[in-house]
Each structure stands twice: as structure tokens, then as C-alpha cells.
Length: 151
Image 1 (cartoon, helix red, strand yellow):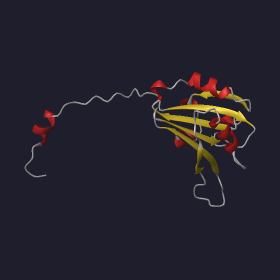
Image 2 (cartoon, helix red, strand yellow):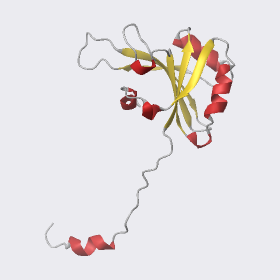
Image 3 (cartoon, helix red, strand yellow):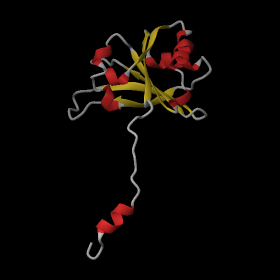
């Protein structure tokens, strides 16, 4: 741009400090349950706090149409607390979504307003469902697999 002296304009701008310390972006849980994802969602819904419904499958087929690589997902949105819960299969007919977590049937991702979300309280409420054999919190940053790309 001709005639504008940016050397004069730029020093007038305030310096912005961006804090890289972010609050946790998600809470991640691993679940062991022998039921199909739709039954698991139904069981969780029956606790009275959630309303899981089917959403579009997570499709990781990539460039090879012969390589079917999709995972069923269910979602529940809590508008009041600004939380979204996503339940996803960890294994389809051929592969694991997160190969490091082969012992887990499902992953449950919680995102949104996590400031007041208590992982331990959530785990206690889910453990009350007799069909759920195991649930545990997982630190997403420790995973080396493609889950970090998905999230």
C-alpha cells in the first residue's frame, strides 16, 4: 500500500499476550461393556441424566473405498451445563479406533463447559449400571494414536 507508513501505525497497537495454558479441552473415559453401543446408550439414558441418540458414524476410510473403517457414535447434549457427551465404538469388525486401548469396548468423550464437570462423580454415576464392567478416566495427551487427530 503506497503512502502508508506502517512503522508509525504498528507501534500504537497494544501488545496482546496469549496465554497458552488452556483448560482441559475434553474428558475421556474408557468403558468395558459387552452390550452393543445402542444398548449401552439406552442403559446410560435410563440413569435419567442423559439423552444419547445416534449421530453420523465416525468414518476413517480415507482414500481407499474398499477399506471400510467406520465406528458407530452416540451423542447427548446438555445445554444447561454446556456439555456434549460422545460415545464411540473402539472396535468395529476389522480394527480398533485406538489400538493402544484394545481392552476397552467404548470411549466416552465429554467436551464443552468442563469447569464444573467432575470426572470422579461421573464415573461413580456410570459405575452404578450393572452391565458396565469397567470405566476409567484416560489422559488424552498420553495417547500416541490417531485419537488425538480425531479430537
